Length: 147
Image (cartoon, rainbow, N blue to C red; front, side, top):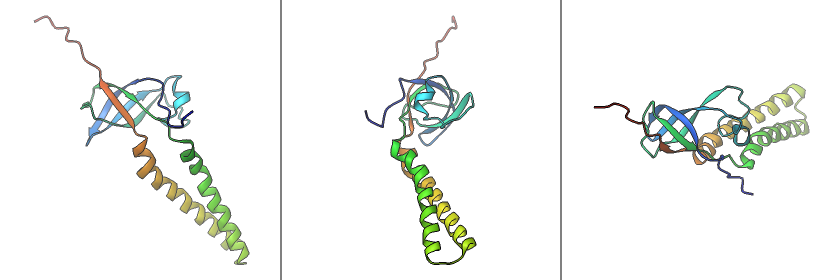
């Protein structure tokens, strides 16, 4: 099974804001969101704002349908393992150099911070753009006026 699985079918949302081909859409979470987690991992809110590619020309206030891909498992693993690994490497190297406990802790925490910053940059520049939700269509509004 591929890790780039699309969320099951299209989901409805409302466009809150649109700028330069990317829309902020308001998504009402459903029970199917437990499988996807493209919105926000572990969010308890009933609705979330989600950026989505807008190649269909949706405007603010439009009801749209979108699909999303899960981020690959290695992106999630990287989020947890890189900072932890750098923390341990910093602690071990500083203890090996016999610089003292407080300095070792500071180096370890600093290394962990570098890991978090690296993960944040990778998420913003690589993963979030590659796995951005995609607006697939705009819901057509029925004209009920009798002219």
